[in-house]
Length: 100
Image (cartoon, rainbow, N blue to C red; front, side, top):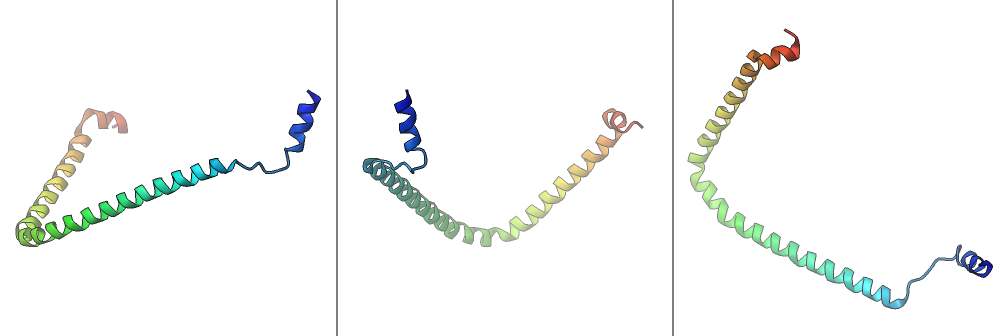
């Protein structure tokens, strides 16, 4: 027991090094994972560029229809949210919440 205690004290202050095979496996794993992620990010970038190349002319062609449609949808949503607020204020839940 005393010998084990002395051996652990001898190695306590010294940095422990890993065997070379573990370092090689770590490096190989890191390179493989990094390369795979790099290839995947390149494919995503290429797909994004292709999608924008296809979608941009469609947005330009349909913009006379899309812009008024988006404005109308925005106004409808704003009106709906405003009416929900007034409905909420007239509800019994709101009166109980505020004490009025």
